[in-house]
Amino acid sequence: MNRHHWTVLAATGVALLSAGAIAFVARAPGDTPDSTPTTSPVRVVLPGRPGESAAVSDSDQVRAPDGSAYNSIDVAFAQMMIAHHAQAIEMAGLATGRAGAAEVRNLAGRISAAQQPEIDVLRSWLRDRGKPESDPGHDHAGMPGMQTASAIDELTAARGADFDRRFVTMMIAHHRGAQQMAGDLLRGGTDQRLSEIANEMAVEQGSEIRRLDDLSLNG
Picture 1 (tube, helix red, strand yellow):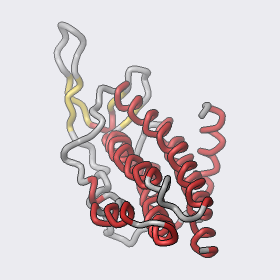
Picture 2 (spheres, one colour; picture 1 turned 90 degrees about the vertical axis):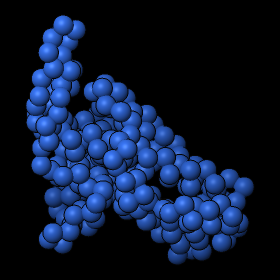
Picture 3 (cartoon, one colour; picture 1 turned 45 degrees about the vertical axis):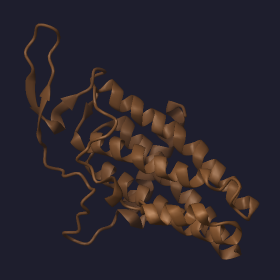
């Protein structure tokens, strides 16, 4: 993923969002999921250099070592999307030896190949800013599109056409949840690079949803 590729996809994603073509970003007034970070800045402590005192700043005014600005929404998105992608990769990995259709196995492979590098980028983004990979305060189970442990167990036990049906249904819901989270980041985050990643993610997962829909209709 080079910078030019991100920029092109970022422009595409912004155009889609501003035109209202991506419906997942629309919400009813007052509808704020528990997993969505608040846009209100919080006070954060910025460690000083050796021998210097720590400083206190609003979370929407923090700057990374490279000078780029980011806020608490950016951090929460990166942390939660790592866990969100990890579940998608777990589900995709189950297709080997369980899926009945070659198309399902192939698409599962594409999902894993796309999302693992994104996890690596998000981990690097957090590490560069001295942030942990996860926050115990986040309710990962409540993230949009996350599948329950029992649903994962049922998918694991399924085989053939039953697996294919469950996988397609669950992955569509999972991808739509990721799109919703990307939309939240685009509305409230301040880090430019992370916004480009979220745009690319929204476009990429929209394309995969269409492929999954096609599998559902053909199944």
